[in-house]
Length: 362
Image 1: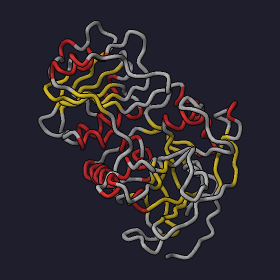
Image 2 (image 1 turned 60 degrees about the vertical axis):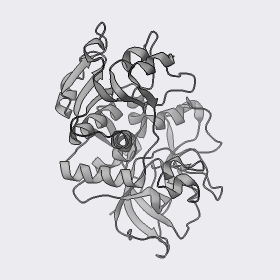
Image 3 (image 1 turned 135 degrees about the horizontal axis):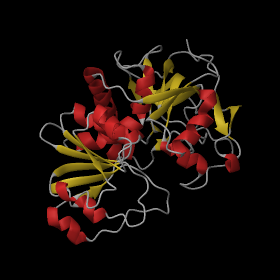
């Protein structure tokens, strides 16, 4: 085990839930350092829609006390536990939405640690020792090594940051459902997640269909790699694409009045998969769909959560090999409020990344 360092744990925290985007610098207690843990000094952290949902409490009330969000974390390793292999102090690594799991259940043993029933997420939760988890709008974090991902030299930290959640959230279902040459992939919603879905699906060799409201993002989608851009405000937009797509990745977290899931599902070919990765507020479920709609093309509806370490390593390797560069806007971490409010208002193109400025890492 490497010796304890002098990393001071501070972060930008919500202290008043009635003013959710106004963050204050606070000190916090990290989890007890264990023999399988990695500690890192944070250099960058992306801003995700989940951060807005947690702080604004659209997914439910936050715990008592300061809440530090952020789960798209890149940093420099400062300490490793005695049982950690392949990660050393000084390495550049990333941490996403999960920080630990039970390591004993079937999911953990089969490499699906992100689906562990006892998964500990990086924000608004508690570690096994009872210490509250605090996220990446901070100077440092500790996580189990299975949730720590080495960053290839060819991928810049500012680019890797939003891959830790935004990227892996769409890469995992693309990889799991056979995205590749000869496949047709639809992406609904060209925001932070959708832009990653286009970038990765194209890099994996698929023919990509981008579905977006209006035409404001059409040229962006084409530059990202979309082969076709479809305006979903057009009448019967789905008709020309019926029975054609192998995978649809839906990134939207809200379906407006009159939204028809059956029309979307009609675009799937036999055994096609509709994967929803956008997580709406708790009172905004998917539109109703009759089983007969699924029977027509043997389609299925599913979702995924985060990704495995194997997924993360494959994603980062693909990004290095194909020179995948996300579209980001960079801000100092002290301007997290600007990013949070811009994200909630839909102004970002297409992910915010914050540079840690409480105790800059050299």
